[in-house]
Image (cartoon, rainbow, N blue to C red; front, top):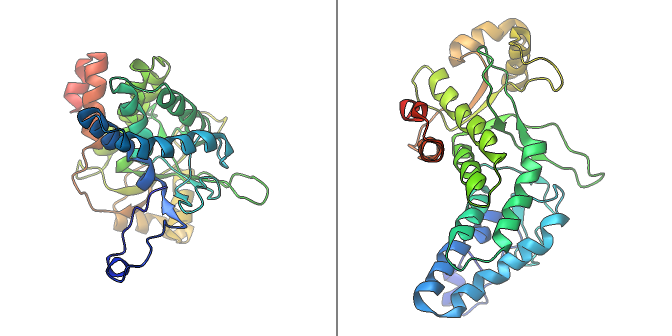
Length: 293
């Protein structure tokens, strides 16, 4: 496994460089595309060999993680162990691992392993982390939450309804996945994930989606109906205010209906939302996505 962070001071002293015990999974999971393409351009197999060994470990341990099929946020590069951490997300720290699988599948001379890794890695999010948020207009949209699986008894802690602008990439990824490896059922998921980003842009007063926030999850098995009391309860949970102070919190924080918390108010011009809208338009040809853009 590679040493992804080079200690220059240690190198000056001729000290050994050691792989990290705990590292973000994307640091080793997003090397494949560039190194494989470099191999194709140079015909030097050392570039492909370097990342193929990493891919083999991802494949071997894919069904051994706490959320089978997906890989956690943190992994041990030193021990080549991807199974111990219990936090899972499609957001920051993990996103590039998943979207690179399809890009690898698209390369000429591709290995069949990347389609298999993509297919198996999307099963858990679809069934365990995607949920429909409660909105005043009853929007049929999907949000990809975060999840933590406890090691002691393999129990899944409550789904975290945090949303990130970065996760808007998922709509485009599922849309490509509906065509490239031919998973047609992924197109409907792609629509709902992308419509969630479109809805959020429209819902916020500025017309700009923020970096990190929380929406209100619908209660599983219940009708998807707007519930003001449930929205207020979610604000109480996230803001730590008394129920009697909810209206003040809504006014001070400028919460729109359906938004329960804003974690990061900044906007850093991420391209993921418009990228997914563009991909949906190119795949479906629907004029509505031009208007959304």
